[in-house]
Length: 569
Image 1 (tube, helix red, strand yellow):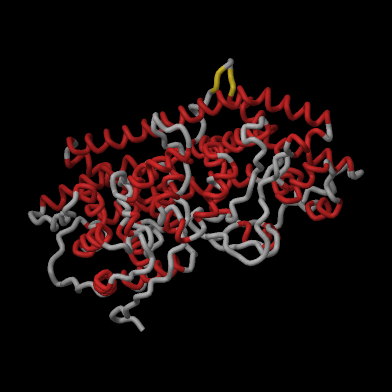
Image 2: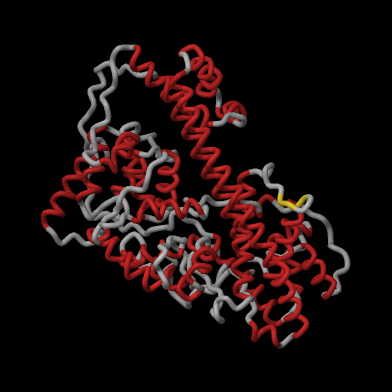
């Protein structure tokens, strides 16, 4: 519908009757949503075609209903033939045969288009003039409210951890008993029991209980090995909760010393995800087979590994591991490097067996409860992000006039007594409204001539569409489009090339006082990144979090080294 919407804007044509016939089986509200227009616009176009009454009020059939895809599953709406032009690339990188992809984002009319219709031009300029001050004020209010909630949440988590350390065993056990029932309940009952529980308040209780239980039995588990580098101490501590201590240390060591690291190698990424507690790791056939299956999903682009990696780092409160761009190459020409990587893969696929006869003094119930709480929190975070991204997709495909109407309705809904009231707004809805404001702001900037005639564009992959508003408002449409297209090429992706990473940082809002242009920023940042003077990964992760964006996708090449796991076919 995106390309058709653009044509409708350009020529002022009404909606084709065959399109209406196809959507008459839905209610007016659902039909408008599917077409990406407002209900008012749908009614007006029906009248133009002589349709005065909506024929029936049938519900959408089950066969047409489908759940929203996850932000970490590499299945785009554009991959479906009905939603895109033939020949457009369908994979995570947007590669494909045929013509260059046409945007699902409706084309914002240029000044030349508007000159053909003086009335339309005047109306659009009035929209821009009236909406701009409302938009800027609303944007500030929304972002301040989101920042306030983020800071408040962070404070609550820290306060809970401090309180738990001072709380008696009896009180902690009382809190644990209320949650323990969820471990033994059936899935449907457990879901109902978990609905009103706050995992960020429960997890500190469980962590403190586990530490005390191990201490009380007189035998502590081996302490996590030292990473030998302060930057990785927290990482190795988390990894050791899910994988073998020796394996965790080997992952850290290899990430620091080999060119094949977590940012460019599927073996490393699959073990890091397992070590960070990825909730969809399939352990039905054992840990080794589960990790190999995960590796295959990453290589086949069935899993958006970078989004999962970024989300898990955030959940554990970890900074993104450093990335050495000069060593981030894909072809290992150094014989020593090749030997080291072969040894790493072999040790990961065939780790030493653990002596199961040795007594394991663990608080099993606490451990199980902790994993359940982490799983629930992780799934809630993922579900919330999916909802926000689905909302962003809807706004991207709307005609500009309809988008402006929705913005005005949303603004009026929250304005009371001359000020914005957002305190009672659910967090996911707040995040979705921020995406609406970003899309409206970008189109207003375009209509106001801020981009000097540069047109809107399509990223080439739905997984990259979400980055367009932020990058476009910082870099301009042409530079943002080039940046996203370069990211689709392995050798120039932001995970492989220092120049691309530097441009992404600037596009996401990183700046220094003395920078006067993008070229000055790149010229300064690029050598700093290449030489390890400036580690961009923590800053990159922080900026993505500020803009409520998942980590951009990356095409992991199939690993050239494979070893048969013991017990596998």
